[in-house]
Amino acid sequence: MNKDFILPDIGEGIVECEVIEWKVKEGDLIEEDQIVVDVSTDKAIVEIPSMYNGRVTKLYYQESDTAEVHKPLFAIEVEGEEQSRGQPEDNKQAATVAVPVMEVPVISAAATSDKVLTTPAVRKMAREHSLDLATIAGTGKQGRVLKEDVLAYLNQKAGKQTATVQVNSIQDRREPIKGVRKIMAERMADSVATIPHFTFIDEFDITELMGLRSDLVKNHGSDDLKITLMPLFIKALSLALNEFPIVNSRANTEFTELTYLASHNIGMAVDGKTGLLVPNIKNVQQLGLLDVAREVNRLTESARSGVINPADLAGGSITISNIGVIGGTAAMPIINKPEVAIVALGKIQKLPRFDANNNVISRNILTVSWSGDHRIIDGGTIARFNKLWKQYLEQPQTMLLAMLQL
Image 1 (cartoon, one colour):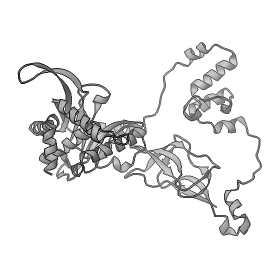
Image 2 (tube, one colour; image 1 turned 120 degrees about the horizontal axis):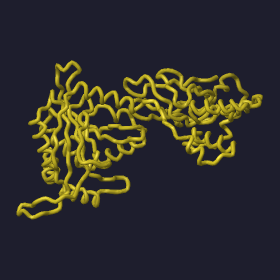
Image 3 (tube, helix red, strand yellow; image 1 turned 120 degrees about the vertical axis):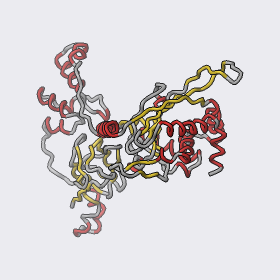
Image 4 (cartoon, helix red, strand yellow; image 1 turned 180 degrees about the vertical axis):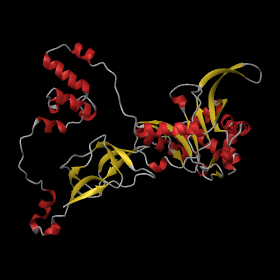
């Protein structure tokens, strides 16, 4: 007796997802909690485990198909079902794991090709040339047969030079806009269309901050705890929010009420495997520096792999975008609605500056670029808020003192 595995709720408001990669095939024996498939929601890749021990009897979707929540995802013959129908005692174990014996028909080229990992366009090309995709070596991920593989096969079959195939294979490539990329585009367009953005830019001298970070790495860093500058930026931002709670607020949809958020859920924009993700560290105001560092490590690793808990993406109150790790000194970031502010960090530059005696010295300079919701935050507020944040970062002892006074 088969059981249908129903795709459960995998995030608030999510009604469908894309099937990214099956980890099993029909006929495979699987165990409880074994990952069966990776699916992509509008925010991240989610691993779906099995709830039973048994044999996979049917996969209801192919890779790249859209699966619906609360609909069957795959079918499984659960171990032990045969016993309830009166299996002999000495045959119970065999009945649990035995593969059903079936008459195996001659497999046609079309049937063989259906088991090959590839795209509909490549299957169409194979049909047009009467090719069996199973005979073509795939060079894509997990042996996926690409269009170039089919062209190379046809060229080899015709006895042509490889260079000819390379010339003939040059063409435009189209792909659907979906998943994280589509949702990000919709949200960014909505943010720009509904929020009057304004920008504020400043320079920070973080020479002393980099010295503090070096001390933290020396005394507390390890293979399991990577201490970057980000935890210091995040903790200092939380301390500044204590003095300027309006920067940690949000308005309702009708824009008739403003809520001052008690939790400092500070987000980090991460260039992940599935696109731009913004996980956030919950309740930074209650965490120490090393606790923040651990959360930065965990969330960055999860976001870059694309497999992240949707709860880590929800409930953010303000965002930091660290474009400097890729390049660039300044930006005009788009607010992560319904938040009211976002800051972009540029790359750190070693630049000449004057000291108190007008001597030229080398300093580590960082450009920060703020975007604010001008309906809620005015220029004076963001300037004063940024000034306090700057003080904590340029004079780290003031940040440590503020932490002791909490």
